[in-house]
Image (cartoon, rainbow over all chains, first blue to last red; front, side, top):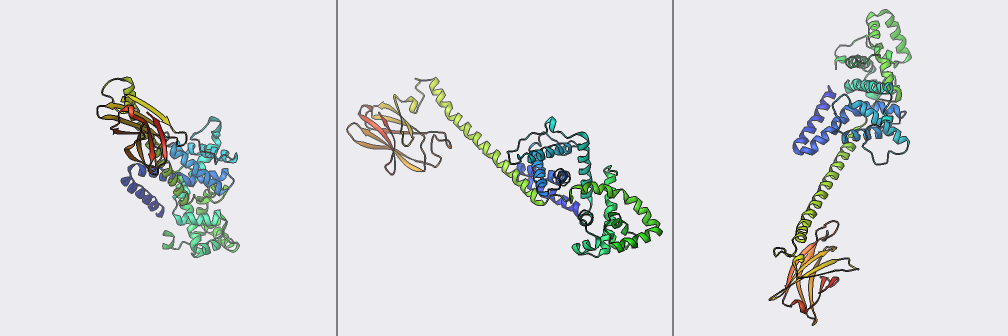
Length: 192
Length: 227
């Protein structure tokens, strides 16, 4: 619920700004939408590309979203083709970063043919991003309890101390979080 | 939240699936599971979710980037917007230069016609560029029954400063016939490509004029043009 409210307030901010500054508001709103819809999922994919280097991953995600924004006139920011484009560009930015060229002025190239990932790699990337979407669908409390336990490797008692709630609450919250996640994954056609 | 409303004794199955119960809790749950159909069913239902989570956890904690990234992105958007505005302004300056160049071209095409005015229309024109100040001046002189009409076109002059146009007669007599200010952008400069056009007059006939000096209010000579 909290998450839905957060999204609504972002959209509300953007529309207030648009009324005040027509050009500026819609540009900012596009960037906010790109960030809101894709930054997290892209992060999940890029983290894997850069072997968990969070700083580098953030740079890559930021550069990729910026290129998407600059190329918005040629892209449909709401279309199904955007994620494959993002994956391709992110992959290219990672390759450039490894060659020490991230600091070079960005070229607004989309995808060279030889830079396009193989189909199975692209499929894996898109699946990862969809799983990330499903996780983002959870309430903050549910997402948090999964992150603190499963992803950070804490047991329920440690997590209870970190979150300041009783251990029984952590255990039941995990159960409800997994149930919500199962539904969110099913809605997106993700099966194990 | 719903989980607080009714204590559910069968919820440890989630933590058990994730492997985050401690040893004692795990033993206790497994004994319970052996006799509980509800937990066995829940185990089946949720069993498929964990391998999917494992895919996501392959490269660290799948936490989205912080709000600071959104701030940086919006900062980039604003920076690019400023660049575009600057480009539009430069285009406007270029257009202004074209407008200025327009009448000049028209004058060249219609030389000799009585309607033209300014330096190009003058009977005599003299141009000089000062090697020190870099200022360039063209003076046009047109004899009139009452003296001489003077047209000045000045380029490569930088400000801020106040300047005067001084006419010097062959007999040494000096007369200031015009004064003006120059802003920081200057005239006929990269920042302000349009030259400065001024008019003046003197009672001296053209034949009595030795030269013209463009001087600053501090007495510095910017450029001198022989008549």
